[in-house]
Image 1 (cartoon, chains in turn blue, yellow):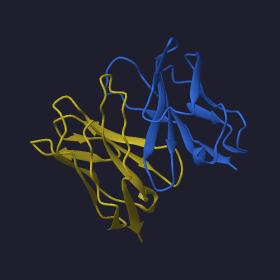
Image 2 (cartoon, each protein chain N blue to C red):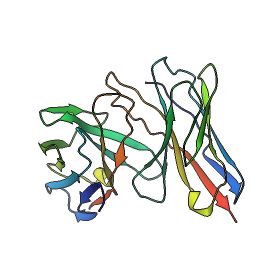
Image 3 (tube, rainbow over the protein chains, first blue to last red):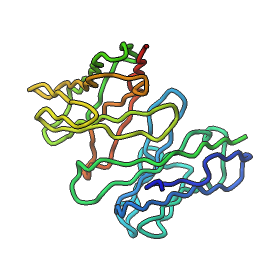
Length: 114
Length: 111
């Protein structure tokens, strides 16, 4: 079984709809992250969480919100989706403690907003 | 955060070594250099990281210059499955939370 899973894997929605993307991990990591990737570009950090009670904005948090329901679960919400939020979304996890710990990525969710 | 620059694309013959360069001239003393790769649109895969010394693991070797302003990722015997986009990242932020992915280098391994 995959260590970091994301649901759904693909989603098509309409402008103005509320969307939730979910991420679960079995690695036992404290830290979780949400990124988006636009075609031909690298990943950009949306939000990150260092533990259940810790939520922080990343580079591009406007239009998004998150919830850390448990150590293993980190959800990303688009309250009112717009077409320029069409992208590939990745969840990642890492161990706490040392800042040099690598991140492990999920398989991604492809979101299309019409 | 230190920024990185990489060539947009490179080709490599199957079985030969692939050497992927990265410049990070503004890197600070406590920032690590990471390499990830992304095959098609899958989640990025960790390859290797280092601070000052050269590093080697089962996937690759990382050579960091003495002044730390550049590094090279070496895939010793490239295979077709190594075709991917390779990202060089200097991790930043006060808690190391910022993995800034640039556009990377698209490596094509040719038969």
